[in-house]
Length: 141
Image (tube, rainbow, N blue to C red):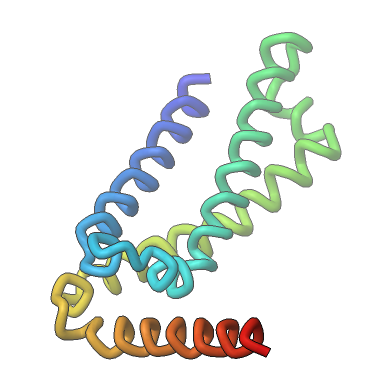
């Protein structure tokens, strides 16, 4: 049970550090969270899937050991537990690799300066202006 809690707390720590890294970036400070989310969308998806699977497998392990009195060998004879645990272990390398890649990517100084995001912000504003003009022209008719 202690390893399950420790694992969950460490995952929350990783998520907190990733949030703090994102919060310090220029796009986050000026409200362009969508730009960051689009770049790191797969990390968000993999993190949520891994967290859910880890909670399921760990919670199931704690439940079966504490209520059913199962041992480690008995757990391995439970098909659903084996499936969830195996999928969790297969996704784990992807989860850790994507977190490391995102941390290295967010270490780039370009994420913290206005210069690197000027073009992205300008194109975003230009795109919104074009959309507003189209909508205005449609209502004018």
